[in-house]
Length: 413
Image 1: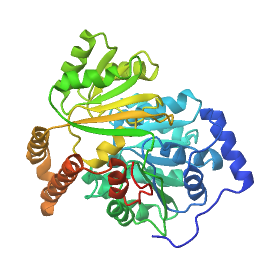
Image 2: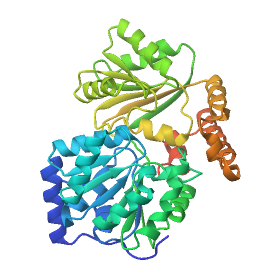
Image 3: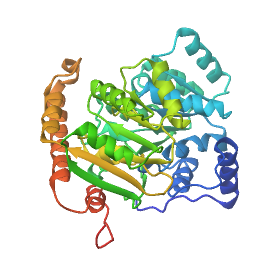
């Protein structure tokens, strides 16, 4: 980790950042750690920024290219997330684009033409596309200034969502020695942070870590008994207000949402198996406050910018503490009190183990050197940790802070 002082925004640059912030997003001020992360990008200083959910990490890589008119590339693992971000940016007049497998030939040609015309400032791509030889050659001709690795924990085998294709991003340093690399994630333990730095070959990186504790959140973990009624009771404590309910399976989301609707709740389900247009309709309805409750798998929430979620319910056990932290972090982003309830059952632990031990499609190609077995062992260990978190009687705020390597200063919560 770096011993060098972090770069800082000069008054003139800070004024320019403020102008960009106001022009495209309508905000008047930055959140903690955003200024430092932006300063690192503008100074071409490699960095790792860990900002918990709601901390605004996307602005850290969206603002810099508008300050120095360079092309920056963002690596993102999900097509849906890429599309949502690009659509939102372009609607605000920001020159962003994406290249991914969900586009047709005409759409890809239009983006490539815009890149050649230098009318794109921020390009979103998947890790698989970024390491293709022909694509690397094209980017070299475009003189990329910076790379932003979003969801950077995916590169670490010790992370909660390891993706082998992220490992290939270590080649960026070799192919683009003049470009700076900036890693962003919402959840990373100290061990995962060290691994991100090593895997991405970051040079003397600035390590920026926000506070993980959310004092306005009330954490409750209760035995799962009658999950439907327990969920309805939790939502009923916040009538007419926004709530997100997380389930383990797609089938669970559909049945629970349908049951809640019979009880007069404005609810809808959401999962990755839905048609794209249907997912967007649900997401937009929730963002526009036409829905009160979304019952979802982990597919829901990334990129959601609704600040007044008053309740997050885990109707099933999340598979890691990282997922729990990220998903509960979608509550109370306006700073007001919000309730986070998890209904715990040992049966959910067994369901997760069965899922983790089942070979994934294409795993034969991923299993070289026992990598798949090692990754599975890590996932089982992370599952054990959240099981201990749920069954140990101690302050949840303290437990979460210490898990992510931070002291919890209060005597109790």
